[in-house]
Image (cartoon, rainbow, N blue to C red; front, side, top):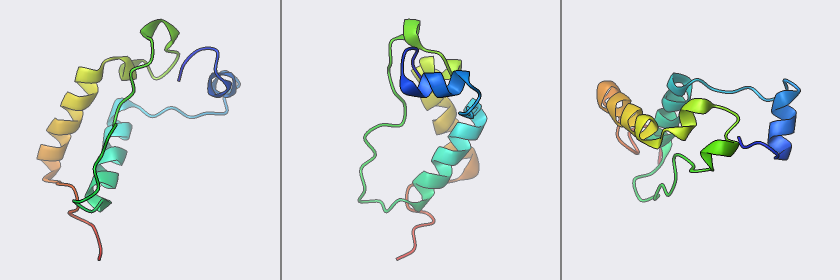
Length: 86
């Protein structure tokens, strides 16, 4: 989340939980497994200005996020649509 936003104000009051990188990656992988293969995923990580980044700090390192995601997908043997129910 970025400084100066409504979400940041809620976070500063302690009202917004923040995932660790590991929690985020596991959640994204669980979602990817449920998506049909014909659904295109356009964005997994944002690119807000780093000087405004409040939290989570790991989200400012896109290569780390995407690399961790790719590694965990392989480790878990998950591909998009693996758990999709027709």
